[in-house]
Structure formats: structure tokens, C-alpha cells
Length: 466
Image 1: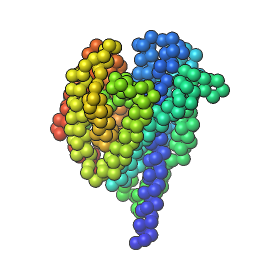
Image 2: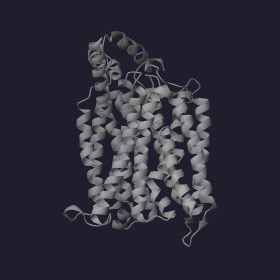
Image 3: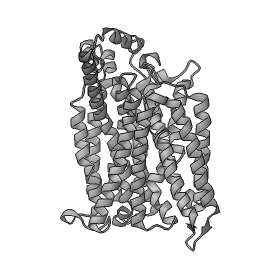
Image 4: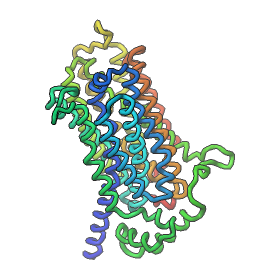
């Protein structure tokens, strides 16, 4: 009995180890999207750019991510999950070095676009690999590692931006070796990018990919380390689902009538709603919000870092409960919480008096309520739509379409992120913060009905039964 228990423990540690290595892609995804936060103003000063070109420099990386996400599934299905991770790591490294060396805004945009492609690829490969290597009873928690890695990446990026800017005096002041601080902000991504590639080279290929390639002995070796015991039955089960048809193609996502399969629409809906509730506005533009409440630039940065910490804590809560409570209850709770907190923020900002500069002036308790509502909103997103969306996307599609369907859903997520990020400044300018949060409140309310009517529980199911 003891030997069985210790073997099962060893198997669990092994799975956590390989899932953690794959989730490093998530860390870089979070780090890379957030690191630009502290460098935006210095960048526009250094290259003397207009606000729309600066906005483009920030958001074009997201369109690169959509491209990376769209093609990553095909690359991962053809060459394997591990090789795709190594390619992403190389792109992350080149992008980080190039962004820091940029001599004009246009080559900077090119390097960011390259990094965006890597982010998109990592956002598809990690959840697919983790889902394919996890035993069903651990899959929810391990799938949440992707979101945990993303939020830790965001937090570390904001923290390093803060540290570099404070040490140098400001983001455009010289830092080490007399080089501008904002350049160092991008170079901090180089060590984790290289480490990701090295980690990817030490983990085994996905057993489902190996079976699809007819490499059963290798798949058996990997599965025995993951599951233990006799794995021949499991290989046969995988073979039945994987080899029922040819190599996955995007045409597999179409129904007989020519439209997309209903399950693919559900995946797209999940992805788009995860962004339309406005979460990234908090992370890309939070200083605008806190300055409106009357905080200084340094205090705004501090609050942003604290919000990042709240995000990490709530993601840990999700990891603890996603396999216990299931996916659907967490999404429902999150949708209700987000609707209430966003609605509170919308009404506070809509009724606030404006100062001379046209910013909402929140007096007395209104400022504190807005601050609390914003962090509660991040809390509600953090234990539900943040991690659970990635868990579901990794497991809701059957083996035949997983790579292709995940690519489409993740690409739509990046396009939605791009739309939200680029529309926030003009909405803020022409309609005010109240209207912006009003729109996100409506999206949160829609997300509740979407879950109630379209999401099926996947807790405890084997991937072969999807």
C-alpha cells in the first residue's frame, strides 16, 4: 500500500513539474503584456510620437498575439508541443532584446509584434499541453497554473518597472551603464525567456501527440510516469479518439451545414467575454483611474502592484477549488460579482463631479468605494473567469479538434483584448469613465447568462470523453 501511495506521489510531483515548465509560457505572456506599462510615457518622449502611434505601439503586440495564437495549434499538431514552446521562447528572447535596443518607434513596433506572436503561441500551447499531460482529477488545478503564471508574470513586470523607474528617478532617466531605464524594463524579460526554452527542452512530448504520430512506446513511457501502472489501455483509448480521422485541420471545426461547430462558438464566446468585462483596462490603464481618484503617480503605481498581488491570491483560491466545486459554479459566482462591482464603479464615475481638467473628482467616501469596488472586481475575475476560461479551453474540445479550436478561440481572445484596449482611451475622452465601466457591466451581465445556458461542467471527465 505504501509503495503504491509513494509511487502515486512521485507521479503527481512529476506532472506538477512538467505542467509548471509549460506554464512558464504563461509567465512570459503576462510579463510581456504588462512590462510596457511602465515604459509607455518614456517611449513616446524618446521617439517623440503622437498619442495614437504610442497606443499602436502598445496594442499592436495584441494583434501579433492573435496571429501567434491562430497558427500555434497547427505548428503544435505538426511538430509537437515542445518544439512549438522552444520557437516561442526564441521569439520572446529576440523581441525583448530588440525592444530595448529600438532606435525608432517603427522598429520598436516590429519587435513588439514579434513578442506578440510568441505570447499568442504560448497562450495556446501551454493549456493544451497541460490538459493532455494531466490526470483528470488534477486537470483543473494544473490548468489553472497557466493563469497563475500569467498573473505572476504581470505582477513581476509591474514590480520590476516600479523598481527600475524609482531607482533611476524616472523611466526616461539613465539607469545602469547610462542606458535609459525604459530600455532595461524590456531587457528584464530576457532571462525568463531563455529559461523557458531550456525548461521546454527538459520536458517530455505530450502523450496524445506521440500516439497521433504512431510513437506508442514513447507515449507509454511518458504515461507511466504520469499515471503509473499499466498504460496500454489508456494508449488504446487515446488512439481511438486521435486516429479516428486524419491530422487536425481548420475544416474539422465546420459543421455539415458549413458553419462553425457549436462547441467552437462556445469557446469563442468564453474567450471574448473574458476580455469584454474590461479586465485589461485595470492592468493597462489603472494609473488613469487612480489619478482620477486623486492619487499621485507613485501611489498609482503602488496600487497597481497591489492589485497585481490581489490577482495572484485569488488565482490561488481558484486552483484550490476548481476541481472541488467545478468550473461552472465558479464562473457563475464570478459573473455575479463582476456585474455588481463594475456596476458600482460605473454609477460612482457617472455621477461624480468633474474637476477643471474634466476628470471625475471623487470626494469623501466615493473614492474609497471606487478603490474597494475595483479590487473586489479583480478578486471576482481572479477566482473565476481568469483561470477557469483557460481550464475550459484546454479541456472542452475533443482530441480531434483541440489544437485547431484552441487556436481560433485564443486568437479571438486577443482580438477582443485589442478592441477593449484601443477603445478605452477614446471612450474615456468622449464619454467618461462612467460610460466605459457601464459597457463592461453589460458584458459581465451577459457573461452570467452565457454560462447558465451554454457552459457544460467538465469536472472529472476524461479528455477522451469530451
